[in-house]
Length: 445
Ligand code: BGC
Image: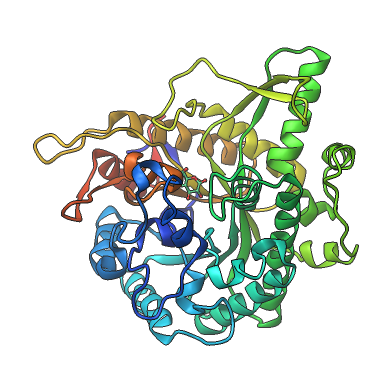
């Protein structure tokens, strides 16, 4: 039996996102999303791949839920494709899109798997992008209308709601650096987009509360523990800035009703600051039930006089995954302790996992490196609980190999292998490893 045993109600799950797995990009009345548009633009994605078919989950969801049940998942985190529900972003509803999620949720409940819904995992309806996307403050209002509909429809049967997945990534990779949809390169715009996302989050939380639903609502933030390269004053300052920008920019407004000042000053120096009604913070800070965190790696930083932030990344010495990300499990422990100390809120690890270049041998995937990754991180999750953190659950990224954004299908994060030619799924060794963890509600020390 496992030596490190988790609390009885601990929620073991796996996560996915609509654009990364569903496919059926233009079926049954679905509207175009910014990811459809972006991936159809030559030169944006590895080998010009796209999510048109992806894992074909839209047609294979039953088989996929069966696999979840085989692994023994207690919860499944997935996202809703907003343009499947409202093809134009607002107004006319698409009943067939709603029906797809209804069938998926029914199937999950039938298998005793708790649905955890992410309302926004980056696939904004293109029709709203045409009106300015997240740069347009009205998008926040449209998001809350869409969210409100989803609550009304599924609020009684879905116990966990996540408003946004990683607003940092949608704002900066999408609007400042152009690596993600909608592919814009405008630093000030990214800050504005991020603010409107926070507003969208707050309005949705208010709608959820107004509806009197019994479940829990929160937001998912990508975090990376920050360590200074040296203890020099300059490096320590760089680490403080990186933490404020990379981790706290989207958390402090929710819990502290303000943006980190150390970064706001940089916005002012660069003419990136923007104006908004102070009352926005009343909305943004609407109380939430939990914080979701996605943790993959850490950040070592040093002072860099040539960057706006005054910060440069330094590579760590440990093994790196196929994404080029350093494996650093202690960073998960450290960030859990830090976040719980600073915000005193129940936490879910809504994503954690690793991409490795898996190979199938005799029908089997011996992904020892992924097993080690998961094991070491799950151990740190246990230590954090032992040391007082109110950690409620852990979701592996990802249930299955899928469309890894700008990397297309070249990076495999799944505990289930997907053969994209045949759509055949194979449970990797890591899936069996995870199954055992769930069965024993713990991990060996
Ligand atoms: C995202 C996922 C993504 C994963 C690995 C997270 O940033 O939420 O959609 O696939 O990291 O890159």
